[in-house]
Image: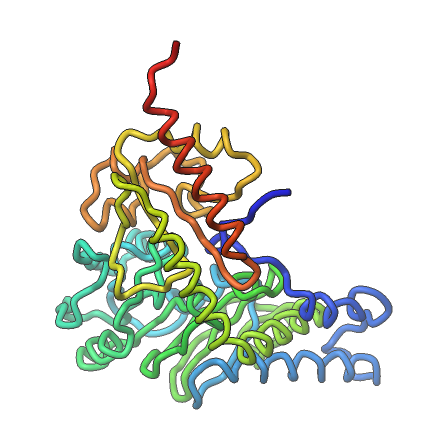
Length: 363
C-alpha cells in the first residue's frame, strides 16, 4: 500500500464529500440552470455549497464557482483592475506565468523578490501605476506563509487591488482580511478535482472571463456541476468543523518529522512563518529522480506537481537563493488529516536510508 505524502499536489477525497456527490452522479442529473422542479433542486444544492465555501472566507464578498484555481487566478488577473501587475517571484505558475504573458500584451509586470526565508518584506514598494498586487497565502512548494494583511495594505496604499492565491491555506488556516480577490480550489481541501472559486470583495469591479449563457451572475458562463459543487461544499463544512483538530494533528506530525531529521538535511524556507503540513528539505548531492523511483510505494515530490517533468530547477527555490544544484536536491513531503505518525516516520526513515545508500560506493 502506498504511503501518500503529497498533500500539496492534491488531497484524498473525504468520504463526506464523496457521499454528498453520489446522488448528483447517479439519479439527480438535472441542469441547475433549468426552471423546472428538478433544476431548482439542483440549483438549491449549488447555493448551499456556495454558502458553505464562502463561510471560510472574509465577509462582504461574492463567491463565483470556476473550474479550478487556475481559472480563478487567470480571471482575476485579466479581468479586474487596470495598470501594471506586481507578483511575488515565488508565486504559483498560474499567477506568475499569467502575469508574464500579460506583460507581452502591454501590461507592466513587476516580480517582487523574497528573502532567504521566502517571505516578502511588508515594506516592499510597488512601481507607480501598479493596478494589482498578487501574493500567495501559503506557498505550494515550501509552505511559507506571507503577511497577507500587510501586503493588502501595501497594495491599497498604492491604489492597487490585492489578489490572494489562498489555495494551500483555505480550510487549513484562517483567511486574513484585506484581499480584494481570493482564489481557492476544492481538491486541496479533500474535495473533488475540477472545481474552484473566485471570491470578489463587494465594490470590486470584474468583467466576464467566459461568455455564453450568462451563468454565475453573468460573469462566468457555463453549466455548473451540482456534484462538484456539493463535494466542494461538504469539504468546506468538514474543514470548518475540524480545522483546530487538523492543525494540532499536522503540528504533531511536523514535530515528529523534525525529530527524525538526520544531519545534512536542511529545511527550505522559513520554519516559523510556515504551514506545518509542508516539509521541503534538501541534501546536497542526492538524485531526487532516483530517490522517487526507488521508493515507488511512497508518494512524495520534487516540488510543484504543475511543473513536474519540465526539467527546470524550481523557480521558488531559486527565488529564495538556492543554486540549481541545491534546488534539484530538494524534496517536498506533504501530510495532513489522513496521515498517521507511524506511516510518516516509516516513510521518512526509508527516504533518508535510500538517500544515504546513494552516497555509498558500489562494489
